[in-house]
Length: 319
Image 1 (cartoon, rainbow, N blue to C red):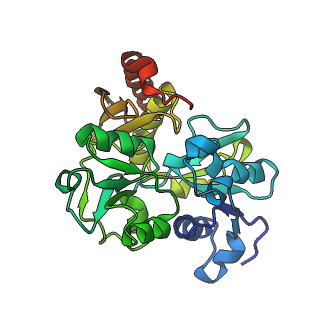
Image 2: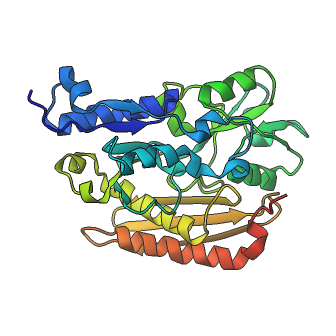
């Protein structure tokens, strides 16, 4: 095939990021009209190491937040070194740099959190004072809300690293996104899955996002990646994230789902110690076409209500 304008895909170098990016690479190449033998020519992967990948011994809130998983990739986009980026949507901050936009949201994987342990089948079954490994403020707060006796162990790193730390006994249990495990072929490992209503996942968890420059947002190849129910659901969740000024210093969960033309959304925020939880839920009837703006408005409304309910209690104070 004659390739005049290949689409260069920026991706982090972790095993999960590469697995996700290769899934999208195949779809982008097909949308460009490339056959299987021309995937690398039509949509080459450009691996970019981010600050979040390099620094693994501290919580994200200590080194600048989850934007450190996207900063270098977004710089490459703005400088024209790549044409799009594939992100885990839960790692994308509520506000994007000027000139960039999330141009497509493909169909979502399972958004639930997964419980992994060699000592218990669920958080409720862990022994008194057990060590739960996570670097997520949300997962920490949700776990402590349910089990205030747990000892939270800071556990960062990619999926393989966290699984290895569990095997080495650094924690009695860990929590991971089921979507990442599924994409790595490890969906059989969890002992159980957390109920997304009882413990709402991170806004956008399970979804991927294709980020481009604004001027490329309506490129024809992007149309093949859109999945309307997912786009509407995550628009609601990210509306709540924006309203709550979500960062690594706030424990925010949001879960949205579409049934027919009804969009439902549950938003919660917790104090870092899990002692207090603030929740709001609501729903809207969707139009036959579009609906993202309506979904985002619902997220903003519920997120603002939770923010007013919780106030300054919701933000982890810097030490």
